[in-house]
Length: 190
Length: 226
Image 1 (cartoon, chains in turn cyan, green):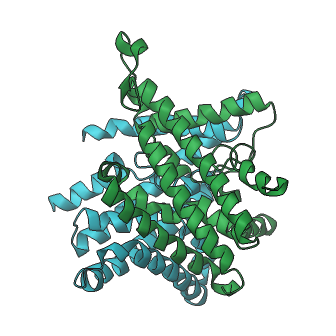
Image 2 (cartoon, each protein chain N blue to C red; image 1 turned 135 degrees about the vertical axis):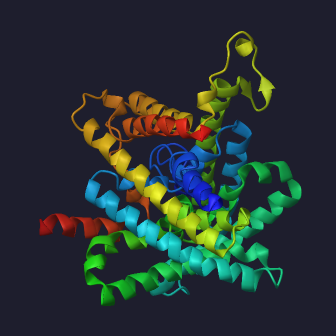
């Protein structure tokens, strides 16, 4: 139980993927303008990350490891993720159209989201077992969503501010991301 | 070298710098630049992968079917990333250790996929090679600049050497931390906007991503529905 709790705290707060490990910055900056889109992206990422870990873990421990093919993991994992995202998109369209309408637009973007590949590789590097991998992936997704939603709030305040000409657009977004990241550093003592 | 080929090389360094102008490949730019040497190593590794994958993709542009081009590109890129990992592991183990997972994550660096999609799949081999070298150099320079600023202010060193000015001033550790990464990148882009004297680019990294056409189309549809 304590390991579950420590995985949760570390994935969501202390080692937040976006704000302290810099994975998944593109969607973080790209889709954090509206609350609805950041929530949609966040849920899609949680879903794909968890499912991708469910698939990649057995592939690594049952196929790659016994045949000494560990070096192929990047190739294998990215293929699995790309394939999986396609499958999820097709399946969701057929069976869960209401979910597809809200998440569908974000699914193709997730293939190239480095947080997803990152979490599957991190599961292996940290020598998690199957259950821990799935939990870790789920909580990393939750941390990603939390960061995205918090940042959407910050950005909506920025809209009304008088910003120097040179800082308009992406520079001020990065500087405010820095402040949000600074606030997350406070968790590092946990 | 003819004039147009030379342009393919130089455009990536300043005019279309992948990090500072097109805002692509933000994750490695922020993550590995705590020290200048790591930024340089990451830049060179990415350039190697970009160069090789651009050549192969440009050679295979008529063979790869349109429907499955993204998976094909990703597999080619992932193959070269694995080679780069082996080379670094064998010859520069300390750099390999400090880059960590981000070496594997070169696979999903949007600069490489973006260049494959936007340039190598439409052009001959020689321009693709030059394009890759130019973009790679631009990326490496941006990372080196980021790394230098963060290392000098954050730990009072540059490429591991102590800097005399900082003997009496305590370095600001926050620059080496994640928060400093965002801050330095924001300031560098703002500074470039200032000296370029033009309106800064409003688009984020998404616009250069190969999936953006689909994504943007979907979000437009969303707006129309409302």
